[in-house]
Length: 457
Image (cartoon, rainbow, N blue to C red; front, side):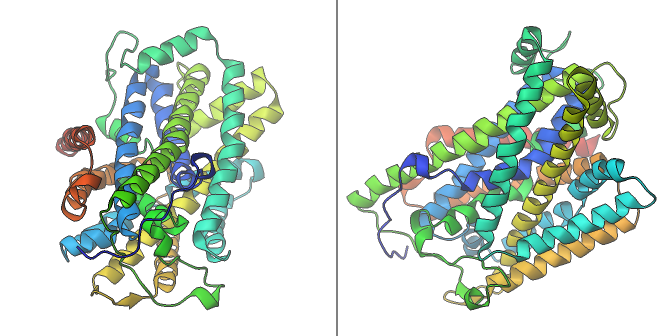
């Protein structure tokens, strides 16, 4: 294996919070806000074990993607391309199809249209939100900085508000029921309630975090943050930052396996695992738990849990029991979370699609214009989303569930592929532990069973 510069010294742990906010932002508007609350509004809190297990699986997948980029200073997709020229084709197809569905902008526009009113308002808002997504991602000096600021801001505003509202509306018994749900105990059933659609459960399970190939995008954020060997990698620049828009090498180099670099590696590994466990795992599952409990105490048993109607029922109960202002703000925060998720989804999927298209033509030392390719992929997805929406496919939960099921199939491939990449391309000392290998194997088997049941059903 080629080797290059020494592994940089890791920063202090508390100064590292940042990259995982982007990935958490991808989860807020899907599993956390829509899919898990929808299921608990219909079936109760006994299914919360799925949210916990799903986000644990994704935590391991994400950190294994980070492992590779810390060591090589390149994305995992470059690593996959070095394994086979066929792999980029898989990631182009399995990313473009599910993430071009405009589920998040559709949901956000439906909520905002209720405030504005008028004929065709929902369609206009959805198209405006898609266009606004492109404009936001096209501005700013560096793409990573824009994304981290946006997602961090939305999370720090939205999550505390949702937590306070939930605590005001719930009692001790609600949280005891939630605790039982973490081990799969429902009201007279275990793990799967009678009547639940496995496709809906699979969709929520896959979106217990970012979902699909977007989990692997954490590799980009590690690289662009300049962590590990990513210190020597190029960033994607805004189209407006013309001085930085230029061809760059996509491949990195592995550091030397020395005693000093092993010590530095241990420091980096502690840093990335701490940061991801605090931001993605802890805050992510807290959001799943809080939103699920809120849906249970406000909607369960009302018969109003179809489509996005449970969100409006939640807002109505909040308005009655707390204040109409709080109920209105709840819907506005929900719309903001959905929009920020749309921004994050298109940013991450455009990175994946554009780089994998370029990797089809990969040769060692070849330079590519990552920034230009990214923005071409971004606006292509935005225009496709507009076409899908204008064609009449607009129901938000249908779009989100369909996208989630497709992404579950993508994750089914990601676990074994990433495991093989780290075993093949990393020295023995830096490879995953036996425990992590077992977790990745368990995740693969679990997704395989759920996808098989969904497809065969």
